[in-house]
Image (tube, rainbow, N blue to C red; front, side):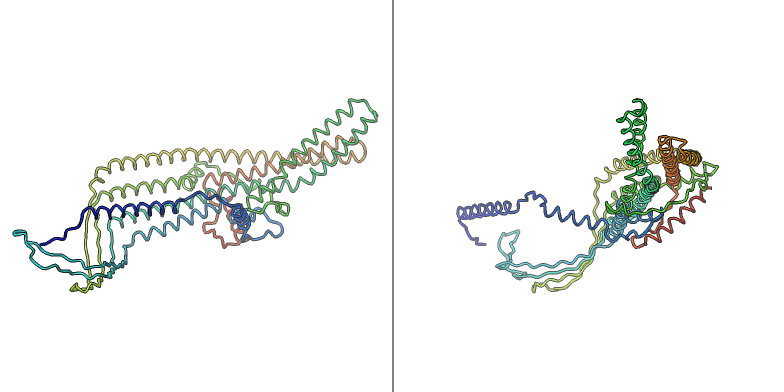
Length: 511
């Protein structure tokens, strides 16, 4: 065969010029594609701020009239941002589970392509014995070829792994639901405490304002007596000091209670500034209807069955156990099945359309040596989860006993506070009558009025503490007073009715 001789030096020059041109083009391309940090503009930040303020309370039912405790709890469940985040986490886990189902399906791929060249591809044959060319140069392909295929492939090992991952994703959905229960129960406790503080503030703040004005007037009178020297210098000074102590106590109470409605408004996601328009219904005192069961074992068993923290660990242990099956599957040979149809426009082909099928297997032998280390890791994780389960079990049993003790103590304190309040009310009334008849000084009357407000506040505080302790007991035993099918479409009024019914039922369950 006669070959064609090319000038080697000329070819090298062309190649060098081509390399230089490619280098220049690559440098230009890289410089044009360089990414620089671009900070947010003030307009973008302002736009985000305005959008967030609108979205915060968008699509919320307006507060109409007076709301009771259960409507406040319903609003917290629907609109509280912490509870909403956990609901979104559950929805995300459900979406990931739905997505994992598609990983078990076969792979269906459609491909199409075009190949072209400026001359024909061809070749010759040469004898291995004589070294001579046997046939003239020939071609079996056109210059321009269009090809397409549609193939269905199924990896058996990937299907098994995808099935295990889907089962684990299903457990992740259940973990997200238990986390939602835990956060929702905490929000309910916070709402109950904040509601009772807000009710106490609504009931006491007017009296505090009146007392503050009364003290200011008395201070002015005391200063006038001191300036005019109508009595011994020590007497008005001592009276003034008593008034200042009273004023300090009144201002301290006012400071503690003035933010109560703001805290409640934040829990039910009311916009800041609207807490002053919030009208609360005073709930009935329930200290006489909250009864503790005599057998603590029943409460312990119920807590160990129902607490979301323990259930989450159980689901994580199940996920970790399935990881063992995944590790075993990884050691097995991989089998890939494939079938499909093909088309090629090359006119030299005898068949332009054909079907193809194949079965291929592969085996990564290194996975056999990797399995012992993987198994040890899975076993260590299982031991960690088991120990965590034991620690939670002990902590939960302790919480049950502590919650029962807190409820019992709160009931005792409530009874004492009620008796103290009633007694102080009688003393205040008799003092008022004696003051009107000029038998007692204004200082004595003022002191008893302050004592009356303090007794009222103490009564409300211990009642709120009792409600909080009872809610903590329900949370400690895992008693779920929340609807299982809570949706964004459910109205606040319907949800409040359901919460009230579940709360009444929970009191009956603990008797």
